[in-house]
Image (cartoon, rainbow, N blue to C red; front, side, top):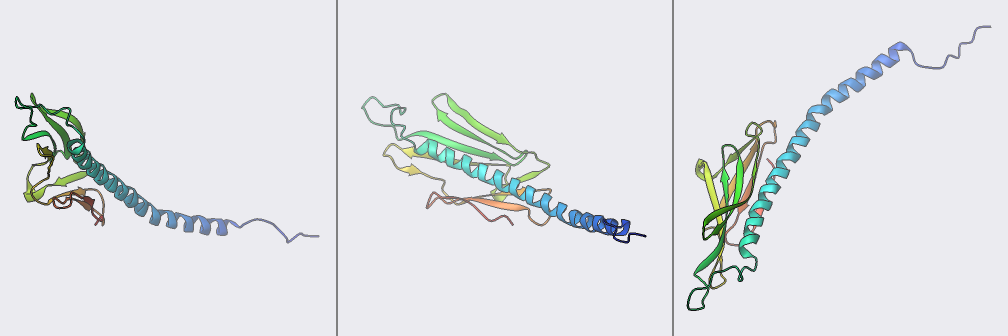
Length: 178
């Protein structure tokens, strides 16, 4: 007596299943790569925002003990100026503190120029954002709205994000990735 109840899959069923899975994987890989690059772009933009905020925090932290007093026992007109300098080629930033001996570098970061482009206002190569406190305790902010654009060179579809420093409110905002 012949048993017709064979358990398992035929070769044709296995090949069709493998073909469907291959097509789904081929469609999902570019989306996954773009998602990863978009997240990387957002992370770098947030790192740059954090660097601007750090510069601002350095300037606005209680520094009265570090301020050199003049002979009349008064605070100087300005003290403890901190600057963040952005350069477009290669894309990088450096945070400086102004001291009596000159500018002292506190921290910096550089990004791969083939992956990212930093576009500064007016297509300049360098931009400086400075924060300080006057002798009367007044915060001195950048004079105009500063907008830095970070562009991901290897991302298709989604490729840029803007970082804005608003002098009126002091807010540092990372915009939507476009």
